Image (tube, rainbow, N blue to C red; front, side):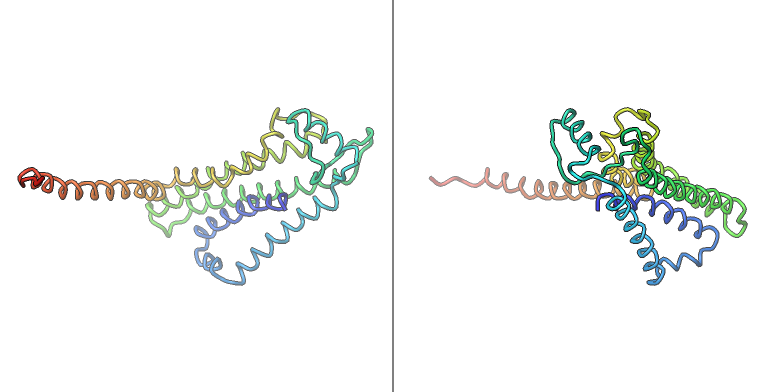
Length: 252
């Protein structure tokens, strides 16, 4: 199930750029995002992709408790973190006894195809969107500027899954097969990077879009104004009461 969740950033990357492309090329098609059939098709496609990831990890990869690859990984984890985990391993032993293993290689091929397809598709949609923004003569210069700003923000937002998902995936899946070290320490921080993906995604889009920034800042400014108003009202009420208490005689 944890591996199945990796489908989300790949799926959202294409979906975001598809929406931007239709917004510039054919705005009428944006109405499809309100169609139940279209939403159902998207959910079905995402579900199929997630099931494919799950089936690949569960049936193609190994990870039994007594397998040589699992034992080697368990011992390496114990040396690094002093933890012993027996169950739940997903192991790809590419060169067992210096012999090429076909199943782990198929997993790499499948994963690389999925990542390459999503990245190339998103890049192609971004290029076509930039093209239609510049050649579209039916919109004003202000609308063109707004569309360009949103697309640039979306491209910058895509850097987050690239850093937190694509690069760790490529490093961790391919370097063991190639018998190279890869990015030092990346395998230790992959889970943290993937977990940070939704948070950094929201932070980046908030910083890049002025409307989001202003809305975010207005939450704190409004809170400060409310506190100031309440404080001023309390002071205006308390000052006369103190003055009256000083003028009135005290009975003992």
